[in-house]
Image 1 (cartoon, helix red, strand yellow):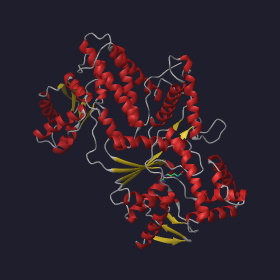
Image 2 (cartoon, protein in one colour):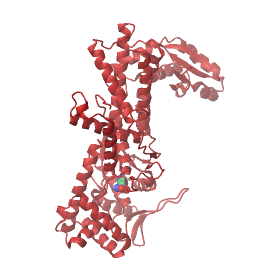
Image 3 (cartoon, protein in one colour):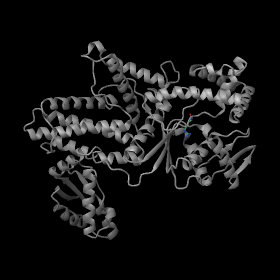
Image 4 (cartoon, protein in one colour):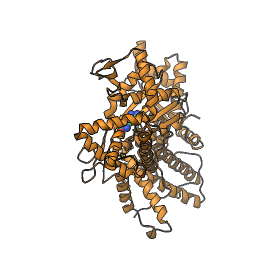
Length: 578
Ligand code: ARG
C-alpha cells in the first residue's frame, strides 16, 4: 500500500495532466506553504505556461476545473499568477488514516530497486578510547543503517578499525623499552595499553630514533613476523573488546569487525593495478598518484610511503576494492568527520581512475564537531579529552538525579530504574546529536540535553509514555479504536501531520539525513499535544469520536516509537519523574 495523502494527490494530478495532454513532469504537488489557505499546492502551471507560451492562470483554471470533479477534494482555488491550492476532504483524510492504521509500516514505501549499501561509521583506533567525535559517526551512521533497512535496502556495516598504522609499532616499542621484551604483552588490559600508547606518543614526538624504531616494528607487524604479529593481535583483541562494550551501550551495531589491517593484501593489488595502468609514479621513494587539479589544489595520493609501508589512503582504496568485489556493494557511505573530506575526495577519485568501483555510488557524509559552551571542541571540565565513556557516565548521572529511587516508587526494582536511566540517558545523547543537521557542528548543551521539555530525546520518550498511559486507561474503560472521522481542527492537523510520514522517511533516506526524522518526531509530538488538549478520549461526545481519537493516538504512539527506533533510540514503556 502506498502512503496516503501526498502520493494520492500527486497521482490524481498526474492523471489530470495526462487527460489534458499536459506534460506530467510539471504535475508535482507539495504540502502547502500556506497551511492557513490549503493543504497542498501545485505550482506547475507556471513553468508549463512558460514552456508552452500560454497564460499560466488559464492553464491552472483548466486543471482546477478537473480537480473540482473529485469529491476527495473539498476546495480548489487558483491564486496569484497561477498557483493551484487544494484542500482535502475530511472524509478522504479519514480514509487515508484508516488505511495507514491497518499497516505496520503506516504506508511508508520501500525503494523500487533495493540495493546493497556498505556503511562505514566506526573508525575507532587500537589503544585509544572512543571520544565524542566517534559518537557522531556511530549515532548518525547507526540511524542511517536503520533507515536504509526500513526502506528495503540491504546494509552491511563495517567498523573499519584503525589497527595498522605506526601507533601499533609505537605501542610495542614502548612495551619493549619498559619490559625488555614482549613476554608480558598478553597480561596488559586496555587501560595499560592506552598508557603505553600515550607514553610512546610523547616520546616519538621528541625523539626521532624512537619514531624510527616504531616504524620498523610496524613493518615487522605488517610482515607478520610472529613475535610482533602475535603481540599486535593481543592489542587488537583487547581494543575490540573495549569498544564493543561502548558500541553495545550505544545500541550501535556492526556486521563486520574488519580493520585497516584487512586491507593489507588488497593494498598490494591496488599498487600493482595502479602501476599496470600507468597512473602511479615514484616520487622521492614514495609511490603516488597525481590527481587533476580543477579549481583548487589537490595533493597527490600516497599509496606506499618512502619507508615501504602502506599509507592511510591506500588502505581506504583497497577497502573499496574488497567492498565492491567481495561484499558486492552498490553503494558505500562513510560517516566521518568533515575534516577528512579531502581524503575521501582523493580516495574516491583514485577508485574511479583504477576502475575498481564501476557504477558504485560513494558518499562521504562529513559532520561537524561537538563543541562545548565556549564553541571549542567539547572537553571535560578540567580540559581533558571528553571520552565517550565519560559522556555516557555524566549523562546517566544527570538522568538518575531526575528519577525517583526504587524505594520511592510503587513496585519498580532498582534494575528497572537503572534500565530506564540508561534508555533515557542514551536517548538524550543521541537525540541531541541527531537533532542537528549532519554537516553542522553543535554545542553539547550540558544543562538542557536531558530535560523532559524542549527538543530533547526525553521529551519524545515522555510523549510516548504519556500515550501509553492514555491507551491503558482507554483499554480499562473498554474503548477500542475505530474509523477516523475528523470533528475539529486539531484532529485534522494531527491527521495531516501523520500523513507526511512517508515523505519524511523517504527524504531522510535520499538525503542521508536523520535530522529530517528527528525534526518531524518533535513536530508530531507537539501536534499531538495540541490535539489531546482539546480532544479528550474518555470524555468524547460520542463513542465513535472516542474510537476515532483513540486510533489517532495509537498511531502517533506507534509512529513515534518506530521513528525513535530509526534514530536508534529506545522508548521506555513508562517514564518516572521525581
Ligand atoms: N580511524 C580513523 C581516524 O580515527 C577514522 C576512519 C574513518 N573511516 C575510514 N574508512 N577512513 O581518523
